[in-house]
Length: 143
Image 1: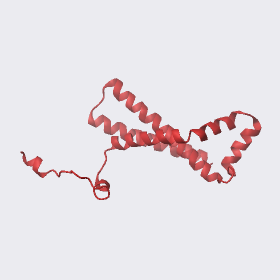
Image 2: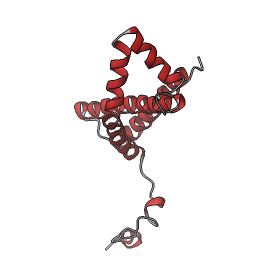
Image 3: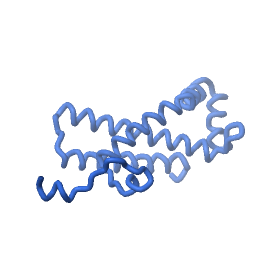
Image 4: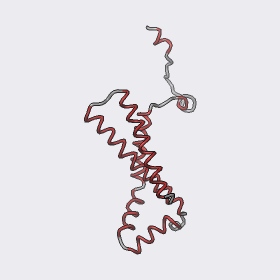
């Protein structure tokens, strides 16, 4: 046995509350987990997506109700909460699209090095969050 193998800790029984908060996930792992979360968000918000599409293209009256949902609210839900849900949906779509494109590019070009994985993961996080901030500013009327 080498010296390195003796110094490494062995985790046979991982304690969720003690060991997992101290574990540092690499950027590629964070992107992978967020890719799954964004897919789940888009799947769970599918009724909201269908309602938004239907209300925005059916008629002028339904489009006016659609716009009013973002300003004054929808039934018992305030307008700011509808905007937050739409913002979560915007982030989920952007992140899922960019991370999926990253995965496809890595598989097609066989760019499976550790350095490229880290740099493309950071680029994915930066792009998805940056575009979400820009579109969120537009959604909340900052420009």
